[in-house]
Length: 95
Image (cartoon, rainbow, N blue to C red; front, side, top):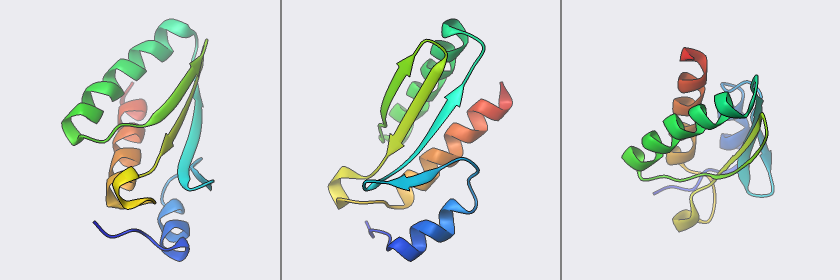
């Protein structure tokens, strides 16, 4: 699994609105109507994470969900991270 360079990460991030590269991971924060909506989205994302065998570092406070992605095995950012980020975006956009 190829680890992305900073230049590659920056280029890929241009395709994802609201995602940033911070301390070795790509991350974003979403805000929803309430806790129930946030938790429902988290559940949908969790099922996809299992399918892709790629699990985020994430936190939830009431209606806010913060997600950080990096590939621990590669000690950096890989295709797996951008694939998961795009999947997360698709889940949120479909809601």
